[in-house]
Image 1 (cartoon, rainbow, N blue to C red):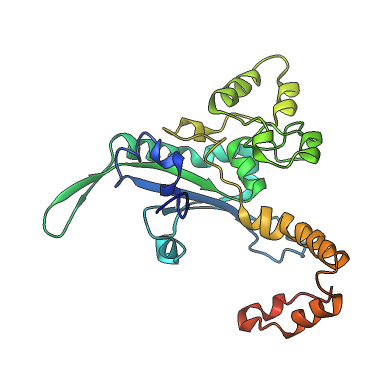
Image 2 (image 1 turned 180 degrees about the vertical axis):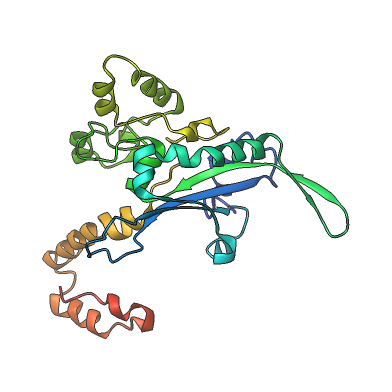
Length: 273
């Protein structure tokens, strides 16, 4: 990759400064994923009764076009969502964390068909999920409206988020500050600190070498942008373009009608503006 283009995790600063990945390019990059599925009719009487939490992982060393193939996605845990909520995700993730730490310290040895052996080390690169699941996994509060500081990456408050729009305007959470905040949960003012800092508990993921819940729980581009703020931003942009007479409303609607959405996107055709 040339210049400042970022195509993959390996192009970024985090990779080049990572204690394991920067020194061992063949180290396995484990990318985990968590989501809930409803196995019954979500609108019926059994809604949420049989809901399951699914934990998966893939290997980040693979090319992105192969990572999404089913044969490259591995299931490592399934549990009832009610049990996950009752015992916390840490109870489910404990064996996974232990295996990851073994992979980081000892590694796994592979024997090829030629008899040659090679040892690979690795660690957890990221844990992916939507915002609600990421907060549950990371020990953050899942109620964004009731937390004074609601973001898992920064110390934004609701009033600050309403008036500031660039990332450098928000104080960032750090691994050291997050540890201090988690330590406060064991004190006499635990409930106050929990609401103030938006955390419920210290996540077991913090036991993984070179992994931090404030840096390695990436935000979901689909939910945050494509199904989130992009719709509102696009609406404001179109309003501005129409009021500034960059084009007419009839022209916009004609383009919407005449655009070739293809077979796969025909059901996503927008309505008239």
